[in-house]
Length: 118
Image 1 (cartoon, rainbow, N blue to C red):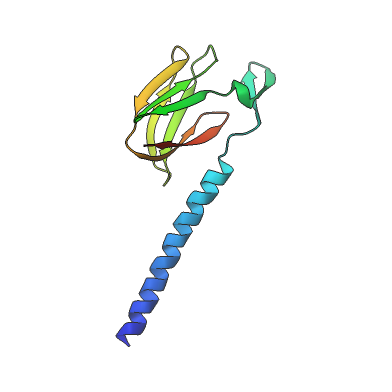
Image 2 (cartoon, one colour; image 1 turned 180 degrees about the horizontal axis):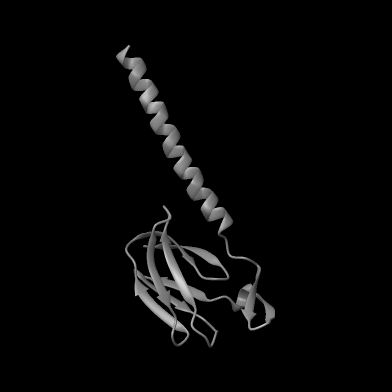
């Protein structure tokens, strides 16, 4: 009888872990960078290509986001579990910050991108 209780407890635990993994995979899949996105300015709506999207570079724990926009852009950095890690704004088209090793999702109004910090 104790073995049956142990097996049922382990099965429930395994199902909860699988739910979390599937949730993370779905978040990663559906938060991929779009091919085109819309930029809103006043009453006009423009479509810009992925090449106009900000560039992200990672070098030894330092992350740099470079934009071509003249305005401030707000970014959010999330862990793979969905926890908000940082909120950042670009001031002059570029911003740098440090992150510990791991996988992260960087989001702005128009797109999101997954990065790996080694």
